[in-house]
Length: 230
Image 1 (cartoon, rainbow, N blue to C red):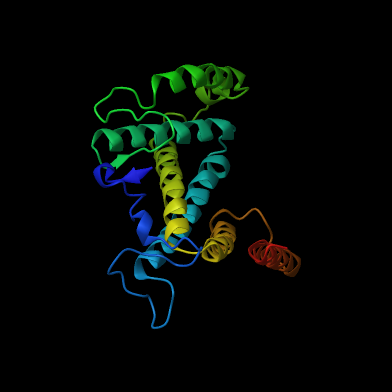
Image 2: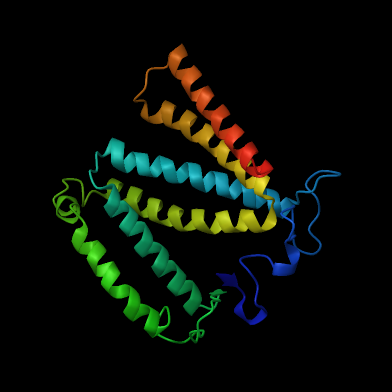
């Protein structure tokens, strides 16, 4: 997904602006966040955006699944995919973004979102997935389906799912793999903390705190070993 199709840019930054060695990158003229720091202000904005979107997405998903007791997680995933596809389509029609792939490109004024051959190949799999979903009937019969609050929760969940994928690529392009891993661990910390306060579900005692701490340490050590190549 690229922004500014006529210039061939990748996401909000150019391909030349990101360092190929996995270090912090940035666009021309972007200043460092701190003196001597490899992270730029744009890179910090990308990392912060990724963590905020990730935490908020989990919160809205929890609101739908826990607060409203919506029994169909797969339906939420389906709605998020459909919303992301529609947003990509409209952004492409408005020429805000463009797509690059190995197949012949689709003209920006075309009604098709992807090449017609790809559409024919993927349609049977998509239909089979819809027929497989044990969940559509339960979703239709859900008592809060037409509740404005529940619909608002689903809408924000779908939009945040799209923004999360966008910020993941943005953060990966501008910053290092280590930054991405550390952001993932930090957002898990805030996700658990905020979820604990807002939704409860677990008693706040010493054993649970120790368990959560060990979980964070384990994920951090895993990220460290993955970066080191062990």
